[in-house]
Amino acid sequence: MGRGRKRLSRPLAIGVLVVAVTGIGLGLYWFQPWKLWQDETVQEALPSVVAPTAPPAGAPSASPSPAPRPRTLAGGALISHEHATSGSVKLVRLADGSHVVRLEDLDTSNGPDLRVWLTDAPVKEGRAGWHVFDDGAYVSLGKLKGNKGSQNYALPADIDPSRYTSVSIWCDRFDVSFGAAELART
Image 1 (cartoon, rainbow, N blue to C red):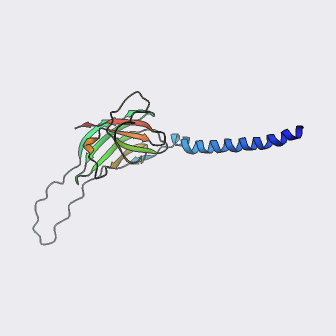
Image 2: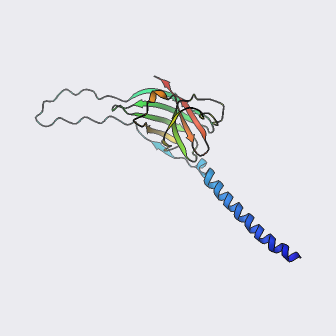
Image 3: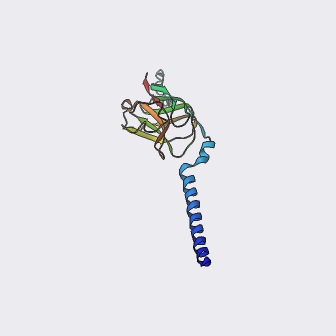
């Protein structure tokens, strides 16, 4: 009678071990805790104006007019939500009429599946990042390039930037804001 128990307990132990190892593997994949200790710094310059080309040889030269410069339309300081976050955000219209969201001096935690969102929701403090951008419209401007530094995110041409009032560093995997900034019009 004792032999039957040993036969049952060994497959049960192996089954429990397989489930535990699988669960740990899935948990590590899902949470990616090592990213909390990995910083990725990105330093991008604000996209500049393309220098005008010289007139063809023999053509009368007109006095060069100053090239249009990028113009900041709105900006704000990042506040912390789920993770300590600092830096500033600017909504910039470039000389060609396109728009970028610029993160400057960003400092936040790294994490799985971080995105930059342009939203129409107000920035709420004190909610630890949960349920702060659940309502309203947003545009994902792409994956966060780095959790530190200064970087640019182009707005799609069909997006009207005046409809949006805030920017969030958003963790798409867990639906939580790491930090956000209200965009005050300048």
